Amino acid sequence: MEQCTKPAAPLTCPIVRSALLIGDEWILLVLRSLFRGAQRFDDLQKQTGAATNILTKRLNRLIEEKVVEKKPYQERPLRYKYELTEIGKGLFPVVLELMRFGNEWLPREGCPPMVLLHTECGKLTKPGQTCSECGQALKLGNVRLLEPEVEEDAAGKPGTHCCGGPADENSPPAAP
Image 1 (cartoon, rainbow, N blue to C red):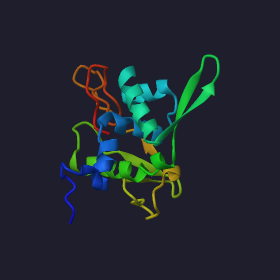
Image 2 (spheres, rainbow, N blue to C red):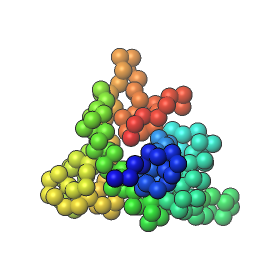
Image 3 (cartoon, rainbow, N blue to C red):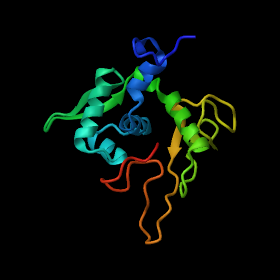
Image 4 (cartoon, rainbow, N blue to C red):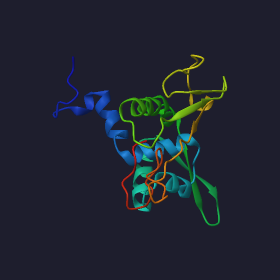
């Protein structure tokens, strides 16, 4: 079996190539926002909590790798939207598995597990490759992410978002 961690030729392993592409927490937050339907820079920034320079860098990386396309949606002033390509849509099952793993192995106090609405059967499902209720395949077009409720701290302030960016701009991003 090939060792994927060989420093002499790390790009021979598809796991290493994939990790180099999506192994950054900000890129995962951008992907999550794109899967939720955000397309405009301001919406992506709000959902991820990323500073402008960080978000710009990550979007440019995703464009370079053909995961995202940048398309104008307004001429004056010129503004762009960001859309997933077929390559980007191919990451949806990976993100579902990261969500499943996070729910199962990395629970967070005060944050309920993330759930999805499977629109084909109309029932709530756990993240994964198939609906936990009807067994059909989960796809980008047949699921909706439902936001879990965020508990407040003792002072009545919302804590770090359970499935979003940081509660304030000085906090590191929460795990998706």
